Length: 229
Image (cartoon, rainbow, N blue to C red; front, side):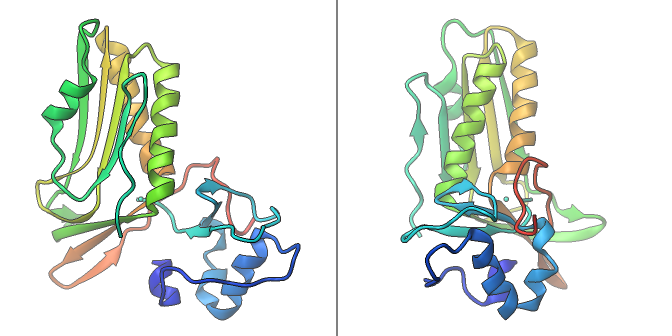
């Protein structure tokens, strides 16, 4: 939605030495009045990590302003030495292959969460969805979430995959797969994984209806910094 407001997805900006990340936002808020009113819900990032508006920026920094998450060439999948797996894809998600990838002989449970495209939203018929994301940051955030979950629960391996592009009704948009020796931690970790992914990973969803289209307004996690703070 910010891309639509500004008419571009990215551009190069020159600012005086000592400028802050907040001054970058103020530059665009001055040009596009609608942005100023959205500051409390926009999250800044610097070099693919969440950042506070007061941070001093440096030459060559990549700054991003991210609207609330719902959430070119894609970065390569990440496979950790422990066997955790994270991927962004424009192809169909192969759930069975993910399950096989994370399951080991020590595991007695595999829990798979798959989010699929439904045919309605609040009584309005949905034709299809389209997903976009801030790719480099998104896959890093997925990996960070997955690793933290693997350390917090008694699980063996975690896999997270999010699909991008246009999806039809019934297709899987996201998958979280957790393998563990026992079922309870596998269920708990999978639930925590999808909840955190939806609120922290910069992926955005556009819904297409018979009478129009709209970017879905989501909600950031409370821990994410805001451009207006």
